[in-house]
Length: 570
Image: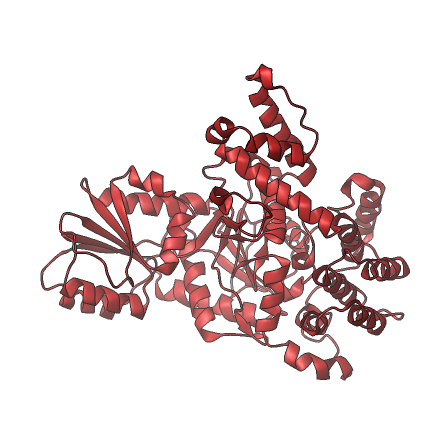
């Protein structure tokens, strides 16, 4: 189960099916992103595709010597653009591919518009999602719910995206969902409806154990997207932001023109592929090794590479090195900027306290540490607010809860009202009243022992103690222990055997820390293949936008005073 490979195959097949000759690839805004995640422009150029156009661009030239491959989402808007295009064709022949199911009436409208008979074929190729890593996909939807319920347009888009993933991986799954989430139940029902309606599309070769789709809700674990990260891919997203594999470095002090925007893609960057799941310390030394290898070939200019600054200077002084190794100059720049931000924002200390808030249960120590950091002028308002959010989530019902005092400290520190309001909004979004699960206390003797042993491992793991709640959920699922009263099936049938092919989808967005969990489970659990998806892939900033757009904050003022309802929603 590899989503990058699945989308890549669709794109290759489109180009091959159009036969030899010069081609133009016509896409819309979304399919442009979908294709760019799996192919570079130069790779597509080698396949005789010499031009890339947007269907909505008004000034396209007439080029009758080109064949058109149109890869579009089946939206009303795109169908209208195509009808106009076919009435006055700009290219010699059209191969039309929709990224999802297209209605018969739309196909009929296209056929009626094709008076000049330029359409060679119309097909459905289900690459209707962003393939981020082989086991991670996203729909790039930020703000999918209003309150606790779906925004109808986003529910429709998510249903399409999720069914496209199933079709592209050739899976007709049984479906389970998180009972405490109305949104999860609704999406599960919608996906089931599509599978029932389009049953012919889902007639795949039966496997002994049917695949399983598990639908979860971000509300159940609001801790994970609030934490600083220390593995490469997750850290780059947290501190710099990854948008369809692109990283904007234009704000980096003294950045050179050619590095203002860089692409990090494991598909065509070997260093990134080998390092994306390693922690920050290892990456620094791996870049150093890479550069020292190069230096060995140039013995005259031996230089000591002691610090990140040395490495940057080294790269800048060697234009031929830059040429030979654009990859390295890119990674030295990225790692250099991460290193600068870690120092400037005091993130080692901040992260240590975040981990304590997420993983330990010592209230007075946690409170003391948060208060200490709120006094530190190097801690930004963003990080200060994040620490108070983590405290508020963990110690929401603690008898000595000191949230009002911490809110006062935030105000005294000059933290803007926007961030202060977000503290109660986050609790409203993912607090105890909403969660179907117990995020913080170990449930049984085994878990308590594990936590104790984890504590003994010592300082090396202090920044990576936390494991997303998803790890426990998947661990139970793989062992056949995931409770049906908390995660029921859609429909009457249940899975007798332990699942082998698992697709997990998180409404409200997944994270790169969860993707790492899935990567490790795939590596260490023989016979089990897991793919993770989300409405988006969050860092803390985008997660807080998700919370804001849900509109729950506007009600959080009243609810913080209101007596808490008992958690009967389980």
